[in-house]
Image (cartoon, rainbow, N blue to C red; front, side, top):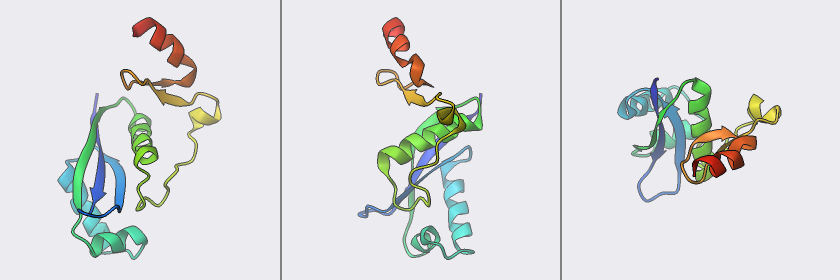
Length: 125
């Protein structure tokens, strides 16, 4: 299975940050952000151009589908509420719309359907 990273762009001594996901090396992804910022004038691009941006990996994730990686990214966006993400609260996924919302087990951090959580905890923990 492939591995991905959930990362945070940040400026030291500032509350400003951005959360994203990638399968690349973190520094390579940071370089791409910097290159893309040179061609744009949106809020995130201006923030990148005007500051010394650092990157840190928040979590390394093994995933089967790109959707699973995006779900972990969403988790970190919800948790950190980064002000440089253009969409701070991503729209509901198709699974959530069908009532199959994914939740994280508070014990082992496994993602699963919300309806399966109590059974998972009873049988595995």
